[in-house]
Image 1: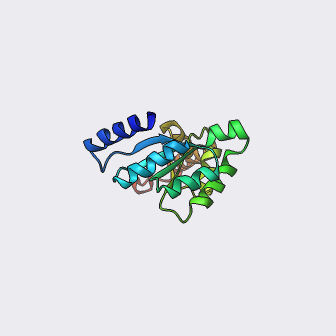
Image 2: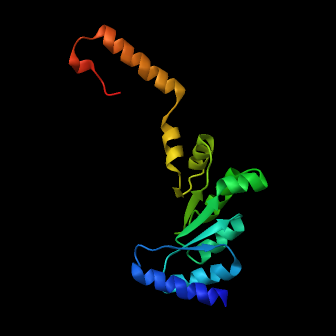
Image 3: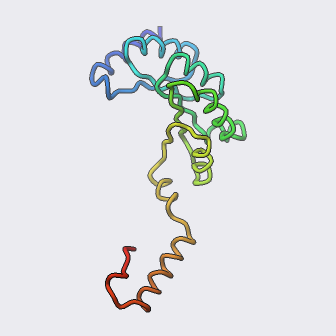
Length: 161
């Protein structure tokens, strides 16, 4: 019954802007079957809350547009979310389904996620800014600015800071 209600809601939402709507469905066997049914109707789905390579495999079989793995949650619950993500990426490699790595909490986790070759990554804006800000880089920029002021009188040597 729940599946029928979800299916009706997904169809109604998809009719609003079918090419711009992606239905997010949690990872249960029943919902994977729902995703397969919706896909056959041309409705794209993202399967979320995936926690194992076997679930990724099923998501690829139903041709989910995205298979979302919450890296930080898996790390907290199982110890090594990056290793699980890496295995999931390997399982999905030859599939059209895209592995979406979500929920990272640190720059180190983001870099480790990138190394897994996940198809897509979601990042909060705050973490995006942290990726580009390193103390040594900021110190070097400050040193460059001080050198330019004392060494060069020409405006052609002034860089943007």
